[in-house]
Length: 100
Figure 1 (cartoon, rainbow, N blue to C red):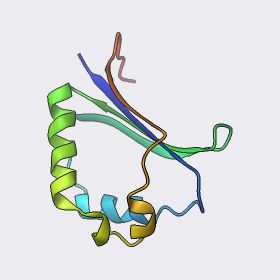
Figure 2: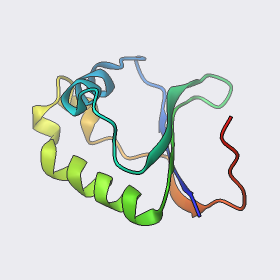
Figure 3: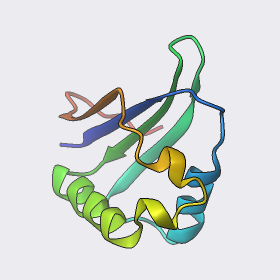
Figure 4: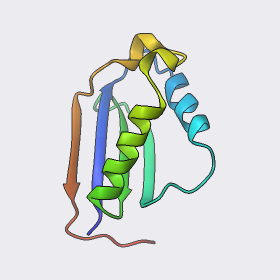
């Protein structure tokens, strides 16, 4: 069953430099097991939210390990915000998933 990985960070200066840098480093190749990726500002709740839907928990875990090995906070264009802890982070199994 698919799983969701969610992260939320407080909205700061609205810079997306680190996000764009990571996206560029990943390239355009498909990411194994990733079904959906979303990222955006939720102004009503004051957060920058990332939501990924993965085929399995193992796919999500492998990708997270790859990201942690690929980039250190000092590599990012905004290292000052790179170590900011999310206010919410979680991984949970979905009860249902329908692809449109």
